[in-house]
Image 1 (cartoon, rainbow, N blue to C red):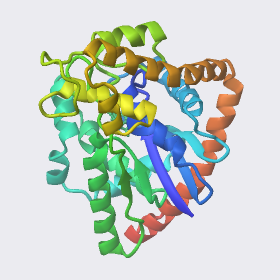
Image 2: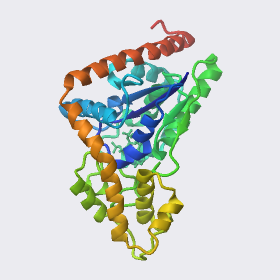
Image 3: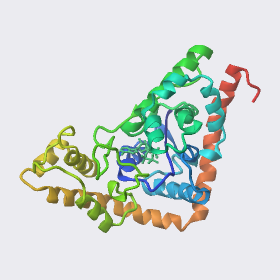
Amino acid sequence: MKYVFSGIQPSGSPTLGNYVGALRNWSLLQGEDRFCYYCVVDMHAITVRQDAEALKRRSMETVALLIACGIDPVKSALFIQSQVPAHAELSWVLCCNTYMGELSRMTQYKDKCAKHADNINAGLFTYPVLMAADILLYQTDLVPVGVDQKQHIEIARDIAIRFNNAYGETFKVPEGFIPKFGGRVMSLQDPAQKMSKSDPNPNGFVAIMDTPDVILKKFKRAVTDSDGEIRYDPENKPGVSNLLSIYTSFTDMSMEDAVAAFAGKGYGNLKTEVAQAVIDELTPVQQEYKRLLDDQAYLNDVIQSGASRAAKHANETLRAVYDCVGLHG
Ligand code: AQP
């Protein structure tokens, strides 16, 4: 059996970036010979100050959204991170096997420090260690993520290799799984920045739950360039290339075919076509999400059973780790 693990923070309204870079692949990776652990990582979210009630509510909403995006809670373990204490417990042991130097090189840490200069807490710094614990607890083979998480996967691998060398084979060394196009969906307002659910400018991102009108409006306002030609050239034409990437992700067209289909057409046409492809795919997801939110009893059952399935596997790994380092546990 191969194991898949990935997580999403309940830190805002999930975006097209989260959908294309991660959630879509999460559902596709569910298969006969793989078991998937999908986790709402609420403990990661508190590295940025959150409103307690809103965080609890958003965690449950994110569970509903994941099911609406195709995660089958019978085939996969769908759970909330803080309900499986082994994540925090392994994180401490791994912190003692991680160097300050390697953590200080993480670009997400530097970005978040710049964005939250009033709250540069130790959790922001050790975030990648908690993420390594999330992954390594499940003897994970594959971690489907966006490009922004590549560096964190690398450090999880380094920590696993270091621990195995010091204490004997304990962890499987995981591989990242990053889509070719859509692994880094960019902001619609600033195509040099990645699309982010905590962007203070709502026109920069399309939320999965945005209405068709809002989706169309946001795409129409997307920043492009003045040369008027539709071609894929992320360096010189980041706005247009971002729209083309989103289009290919939602239509399953090759980039070559997409560029050929838009030959001689204007940016207005590209924007409307991208918006329509997104609306077509997201409409059923939105309907299912709303239906699930009305069934809190079902969602509670899902997270309880997900947490107990996850804890069983996680606790086996944690016991082995405690044994290696000499903790009673
Ligand atoms: N723009 C993106 N393009 C492709 N993939 C993306 N992901 C995030 N943004 C993009 C992928 O979505 C998964 C879940 O992300 P996360 O919730 O852990 O947080 P994040 O990476 O920090 O994403 P956000 O939206 O930017 O959240 P905030 O604003 O709260 O920091 C990951 O696999 C990520 O790669």
